[in-house]
Image (spheres, helix red, strand yellow):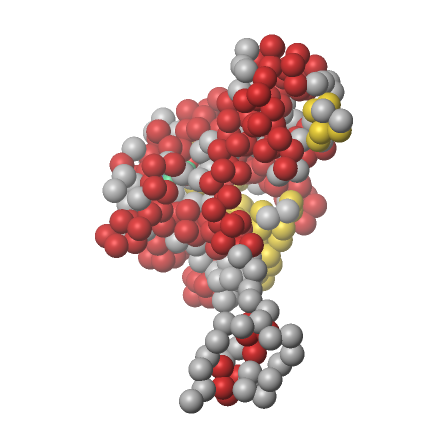
Length: 361
Ligand SMILES: C[S@@+](CC[C@H](N)C(=O)[O-])C[C@H]1O[C@@H](n2cnc3c(N)ncnc32)[C@H](O)[C@@H]1O
């Protein structure tokens, strides 16, 4: 009788075919455990980076320049051996350089991890995965179909630090998007930014359009972040703040040249996302454009791990949050009546649908 065995024979035997054992190459050479270790190490990798940020390692290295561990430990007031262990973990992830015991910022750290880096993510890293405790209860969340403490229980507690942390990236994306959309060619456009956060899209568009005006919406308290940001960018006099739920606030029909749905659909479920797209359609003037930014998985939900895991992140911490594929959004835009759809990627990993309301609607 044929016995399946886990023996790595050096050559394929006739019995080692799909018909006999299923996976001939797996029999020939067992798969590596690397993906399993990658998952296990993921937790440590994240908390190593978070601890380095909490200890101000990157900002302090910016101040000192290249240095051995002892002076850095003294400045940070921490034990040398513990700091070395932490920094070696950061170096192992390619987020810091070390040559002959001298530690120094590499280009990635200078750009993303020092607090005044040109594309800093320093304030985002603690909040981006959602409430950490929800990850420790993920199996229960799957069992129950709901997280024990969804962010909807206290949205402003979660969103205020989140939108502070994402502003730099989203503002870069929205500013760069002009190269693809040419919003700066519009004369006195009127913009509606729903769930605007710190209003990176509205501010970028107003920066590009000196006569433009914007209505900025977000939940009470979160909208205070937008209020501060529009002041800092000197566009407050061209903005109206409209706090409230984006599903129910008053929106004037056929009044806007651009409506922005920036990373808001993935918490809303299919019905909520479609409702927002429909609201945007009604709000737009004919030939007005919707900008819908999100993390979109591919049709098979496996070739873009960043977007796929963002979907799992939403499931872990929100009531009905899941990402939707390019195809789903594309179909929903069609159903709502939009035409002339494009997908742009102004900066890496930040994709945005641009869809136009037809003239005869
Ligand atoms: C991921 S942030 C995106 C912020 C910004 N649009 C951007 O692209 O950077 C989602 C935003 O939607 C807001 N939001 C969530 N639910 C909302 C609701 N029901 N009504 C209005 N805003 C909401 C949150 O407060 C938060 O600012």
